[in-house]
Image (cartoon, rainbow, N blue to C red; front, side, top):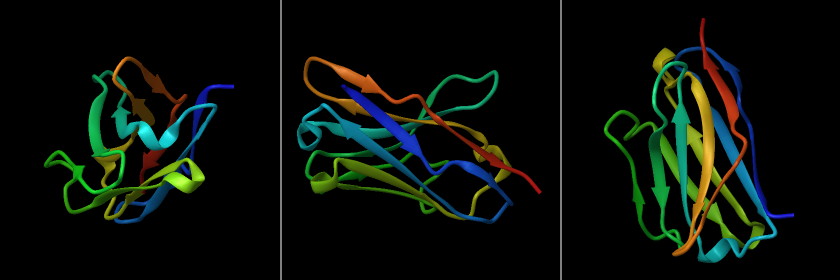
Length: 116
């Protein structure tokens, strides 16, 4: 079955940390550029992290730069998002995205709630 499955979301206090995981099955994971997006209620989905196929290059928007880190383990078909110093405004559903030249694939999302 071709799919991406995210995990690791949950409830965390401001200033806390979470590590999200996304496992790909039925896909050639190592040939995909991988990204994490998020969507808060009433807002558009936004990019929070990107990583190239070999993991050599990453990219982040200013809103998460210095707090979030994306990395991948192609041997495990897994991409991670380490989130530190979480803020209330980081509350959203987080989605994993795999992108090849002619197709893209989304996961079902994992909820992250940052609240005291």
